[in-house]
Structure formats: structure tokens, C-alpha cells
Image (cartoon, rainbow, N blue to C red):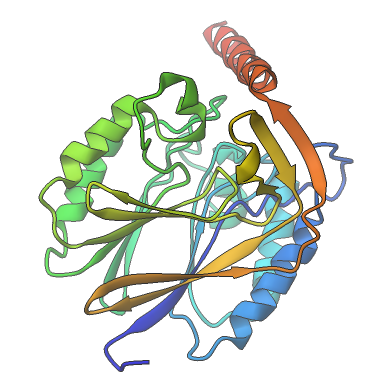
Length: 295
């Protein structure tokens, strides 16, 4: 590998559960998968310079789940920084106190950035409470614009849980960033030549897209794998996991997927009608939460 290149790791959809609660919506041993992947990461040569984790860190967002995640990560003996963003399964009020030791403004989106070895890594929180799909809240696009204007000489990686929508299909907004926010993101990034790529998760299969000239990389994650052969009927989840090794060269970004051993055993099937019911349930939760907040 060239002296002018560096490597990093992208993990996503960790879905760590609350060890004190039986979770019928946790379809695999995500703790064991995370430990195995961290062992793989530690064995890499040259050692990655950083890790990005693109959301759904936990399965339900309880403090106990984040405590288990923190324990696993702290105990792994990693010698590189780990940068997190949040997904629709996360809860900010659980994440902030446990993972960051922060008890102020715990309802705010977790937007942050870092410069590591000449790479400007920008992480934007696309989660919105009680929504499956991705959304930006007021002020987030302005924050992203200001952050991208910093370090103009540096190549930039954008990390967010929900990838931009590839088509303007309203019925599929649950699997991506909303169409309106996708357009806002496209407008913001248009003409910027130093965007290495966008790293995301959420849909549980390895996918690479050329989105208006920008590589958009999605990973399977560590909970379950989407059977892409079934996508015309709904969602068929099978056993499977992966992580990705990113290499940044003067020529751009390379992504190599590292699948974990799996039987591809069926775990769960959702028809499109079933997905409609799941979305309706989330919307009911949102309405109930809004009613309680208004009291």
C-alpha cells in the first residue's frame, strides 16, 4: 500500500440489545458479532486510522444497551478513535449520557466532525424520533454547510445512517433520507469536488451507488442481512453481517467489504403491507409522544 494512502473501517447497524430484557426483535447475537468484528479490525495491517459507526448502535436505545456497547468497545483494546452517529433505532436521551457523559440538550441531533490524518470526517444525525426513514431537523443543513466550508483543502467523508434517496419514490422514503432532505443535500454538495463519499447503513445490505458523482456506500451491518432477491416482494432478513475497509488514496476512495461467516438462514420476512403496518405503528407512537409533550 502506498505511503500516500490510509485505511479506516466502516461499521454500521450494531443493534446491541439491553442485556436485562428479552428482545423478540433482536434476531441474532449482535454482541458476539461485534466482538468478532472488533477482533478482525485489530488484526488488520496496516492498522486503520479510525472507525466510523453509522448508526443503529443499539436495538431500542435504552441506557443499558449503550452501557453494554460502551463496555464492549472499551474492552476491545482499540488503538484508533471511533466516531459514532445515530440511526432510527437509537435514542438520543440514552446515547448522550452513557456514550458522551453529556446530560445537557440530550434531545438535539448529534452532529459533529473530526480531522484525522488529513481526512475531514463529518457525521450528521439523520435520525428523527419515531421515524424509520431519515430526516434533517431545523438547522442541520446549515450546520453541515458551515462544517463543509471548514478545512477547504481537505478531502471529506460524510457519515449518516440514512443514505440519500436514489429515486423520488415517496413509498420508499422509509428506507432512505427523505426526498426533500435528499434534494437539500444534493443542492449543498453540488460543485464540491472534495467529497470522498457518503457512508451509511439502515437497509442491511452492501450497496455502492454513484449518486450524482459521489460514491454512496451502504453496509450490511451486524444484525441481519437483507436478501436482495426478495426486494420486489418485501423484506426477507437472513443471517449475515459484514464490515468495510476504506482506503483513501490520492485517486479517491476504495471500499472493500469483509463478510462474516453466515448460513443465510431466514430470520424474518416483512411484506410491503407489513412494512406499512410498522410505519403506521411508528407514526402512532409519534402522535402519542406529541400529545404527552403538549400536556
